[in-house]
Length: 585
Ligand SMILES: Nc1ncnc2c1ncn2[C@@H]1O[C@H](COP(=O)(O)OP(=O)(O)O)[C@@H](O)[C@H]1O
Ligand SMILES: O=P(O)(O)OC[C@H](O)CO
Image 1 (cartoon, rainbow, N blue to C red):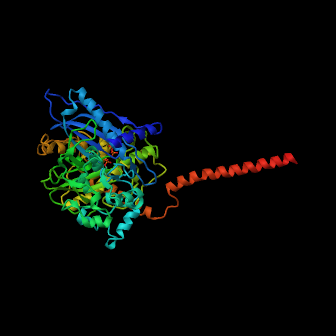
Image 2: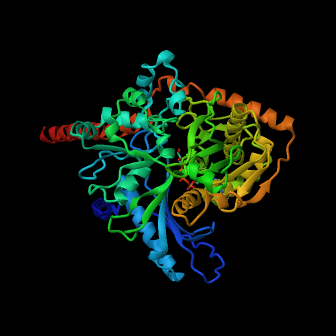
Image 3: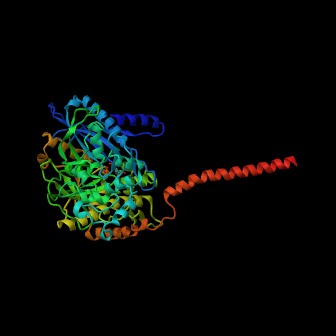
């Protein structure tokens, strides 16, 4: 695994500068009956963390797991990059540590019979197929550098209609999706252009990068993706489940640079990278939100789940029926459980910032010290937000608005507003955004959702869950474990090798707590109307020319240091020469 070796070398040089926080979770041990069952392992590459989890097949409890934080680099305002080598390095370390835990339980690595991969979607990597070198850092899903690339593409479609391609691929033209990131890489990175010219270029979402490296990299690594990840690129046709020639031409992406699209549940290949995972088959791939849908047991049409993490993603299973949203949602593939199985579709409402708003309040405004410990307590000290509304449109608004020109606002401040109100408004923002999605979903499907299954780390916040029930007026059913993304792909990987059955999983109850609404319709509707007013005020902000960008501001500050040194230097020389002159005369 050459790439990992290179990464480790690079890391040891950087060690003095960058410190990685590793989190070790002691999982609650399931009660053992003495008999050993086959094990299924999962790689979960999220936006902020990499996890490796090991399950006993047919069992929803974790046997072992290990997690590491990732480094996010923001070289400019609105940009968000990750290190593709770091992803592989963390996977390797997490796997080693989780397998060490297994050994303590009397298992060995050989009991792991298969492996699944679940990942942050849309994040895009370009690499050289002969050397395995990434040609640029990974461009993360929430990076908005492609703003002008979007405008250039819109200029090519009738009426600059951002929904023009929805009939083919289910998605609006937005910086969120991978094709824009690929186009940007080709337009702006010399190494990518050169690799494209020399036919050495490979593009991929993170699942493809991981699979390619695990299965041999430059030595015949598999360049494969699954339908759920491919459905997030703007390049896959939702009917044929293949790269669409018209879309590839529109974005200028050559078919040969793209991975082969396969189902979510089949044996793709075997790990051949010399790591601790060597020899294990890989038999499941799902984007992390689709994976949570499976983990939450939403395997029948009409079932939906909402996952609260950095972003928040509500997926509604529409079965084999492909529903085209006319209310701002996207149509995506939920899963395809085998090469010969039909695709199952979902409607999705994507929210770019949910838990991310809490991190903003912690890191930028310094209103909280510890997100998971302080948020609920501080927001719970007031009974309302005091009419404060917080729209966290840091990188525009996703569903159902799809407005890249929106920017964050906090409005309704008075002399009485305290940080407690603002933090509570941050929590309510997540609930209002979810209500925006639910309203759109109910209109698209014609049948209102009567309950909401939830998961994700942020769902451990009881106050947030109660606010969610109060502001949507439906019961909120919280999952037994916050991490349904890893579980979902574990089931799917086990399913394809016959040790974990999706059909049996359908009858498994997954929720642990229920939060019932405690407000009246009038109250929740009045608050929702105010939220809509706040959203209106956030729109159009980024289209007005800024006086100065954050990046320029930093640059000006830096460039002013030499100028100041020059002035001070000149002044000192002037004073010194006049003293000398005086002394001489
Ligand atoms: N108890 C809590 N209350 C409010 N927000 C929380 C709480 N616990 C976690 N969060 C937020 O939820 C998010 C959790 O994200 P995480 O699961 O680490 O996933 P990822 O970054 O991969 O999306 C973070 O942004 C964090 O700020
Ligand atoms: O890693 P998460 O939980 O932030 O998920 C990111 C989504 O997959 C982006 O579409």
